[in-house]
Length: 223
Image (cartoon, rainbow, N blue to C red; front, side, top):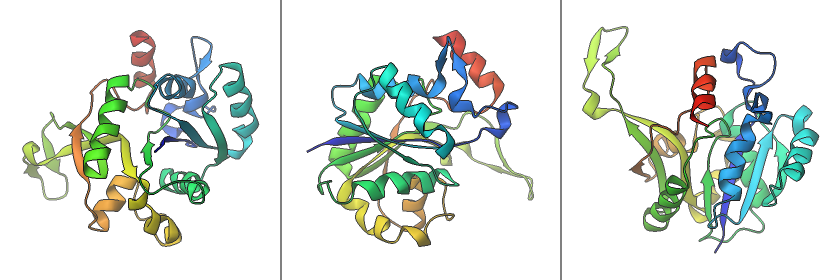
């Protein structure tokens, strides 16, 4: 059985107020997404990595992977218009050579502070449950804006990546992918929309997504 990491890095990062897509911004002279790839490269439980990225950066990504010795990358495919479409582009590539009990762990490239422990716990939970997503508790007051109604935060969680799936649990979705693109943001919410079983395990607050300039500054201070 293999553990395959699917890493979409295809976003444009409009909220970063920068012409360069956020995953390619430099941190200590190195592209942000490489910090994510290195976590999976260095994890002994990961066998392969498949990346989806913007077409115009494809050759650049291939060269950087060579430069930084990211040897587990087996394919760099075209990213889609959405994160979910990029994920489907990766998964479609895997159909012919992936076994039912192989695990696919999906993690977005702009969460570079993922820990080895979280990768391993997610893979272990996938072996147990078949489909799993990570989350962190909601600690803020949650309000339904239009109705001005408080939502009890004990009933709300914030979904993160990584998310992991036995490949057999993805096959029917992949075969019908065209009807699902645009209906969800991640594989987790697609599973929920389709009433497919998915379990949740606690993630890590430091596994935050780089969305705003402040997030990037925080990551710089952490490393």
